[in-house]
Length: 130
Image 1 (cartoon, rainbow, N blue to C red):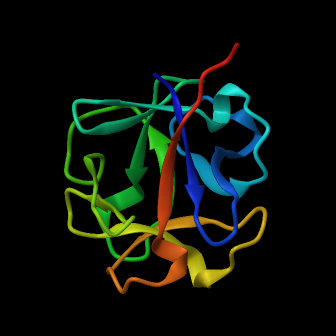
Image 2 (image 1 turned 30 degrees about the horizontal axis):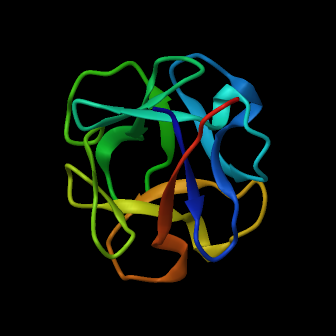
Image 3 (image 1 turned 90 degrees about the vertical axis):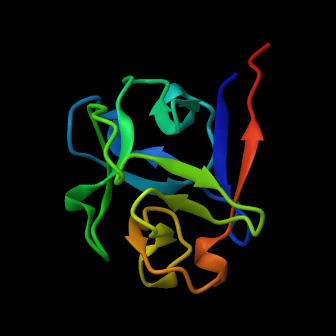
């Protein structure tokens, strides 16, 4: 089943900017509209875009690097785990983070060291189109 990933504090969701469906597409926060570029599936510990079939990826796999979508290769920078404290942790140990704590529409997502701030807290919400 498809789901959205919503920042708890802002209510904004992960969105593939401009509905781009190519390697390197930027992932941002955006108001919920329910189109496929905001919907995700979880397969083999990877978060897969329903729109493109590409996966969430920490570009370059280094601290502070942007979150993009990319063809799945199964590296640690593409593996994701949903922790009990509402953080989403990558196979590299970094977590999903809103850059600079700017919880506004269009804010960029990055991989960052876990500190437990509101800009690292996300809820996974099932989405069922009827």
